[in-house]
Image (tube, rainbow, N blue to C red):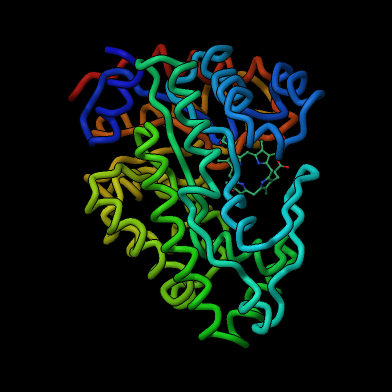
Length: 343
Ligand code: CP3
């Protein structure tokens, strides 16, 4: 069975004896080869150069034997053609922020198939680089999470800016969110057409919302995107950081995979979300320390999910830049050497 067959079987909810593993932010600063590559090229330029994207996307698969590749890009490129200046240092810097509704009329209309074509080109180039036996994922940010950055979020302490805009200007906010949802559908369709085997939607910030606010500001737009993808048979995964209180909503979305952070117990998610495929959920902070802890906690997770059909090992959020590569190797080895048998 190739890595691609193993991954697709799990995406489709099948039981496999081996569990596939990939890692959010698997191409990144914790890898010396990535840091070396980045000495000569900025993050933005890298993302817009298909050959460079293919190289960096392939690195973690080839160096660490991971079971899937995720295209190297960022969720915020969707904002640039609206006329918003975007830089990374290393976190995103956006100007101008959306602060007043008058700014909306200045946001340009655009065709994602042409302005974001560099992502399609990168997927095609990466497929050539990886060959046909490695699964390749595309992605986008969820409308709510992209809106958070658009309205000035840089970290948790800026969340009030987003909420202030949403509560002061609910109608204008809804228009922007809907626009982002429509752009995202076309963007993901393009990625699927360029060879992405599945796409992951990152709603990193939605878990900060209470249930009512999630229902108003995030859920309708996730639903628009996910229902359309399902209609077109494009496989999709949804990641929300801190989603334990939102599982009843996630349950009704026709999404193939639910990617969970470490605060949601997998057994509980399994009870609520079966037969969806689950992905997760080792705490990335644990990878900073003792190797034995990594092996022990990864083994716990594998046992917890030993009978579940459709399971993909991942971290609960992106890998941290200070992570020792040896710990990642130990993690991959632990997952790869675990053989499941159906009880
Ligand atoms: O997972 C992967 O390996 C694919 C690449 C990927 C990146 N960003 C590369 C990146 C993906 C899937 C993303 C998504 C993304 N970008 C999200 C959602 C996922 C999440 O982590 O919550 C968000 C919120 C962003 C916005 C963003 N871009 C942030 C917060 C940062 C700073 C991160 C950091 O580590 O400092 C970025 C920049 C960014 N995007 C980097 C990378 C590798 C760091 C740039 C660098 O290497 O110098």
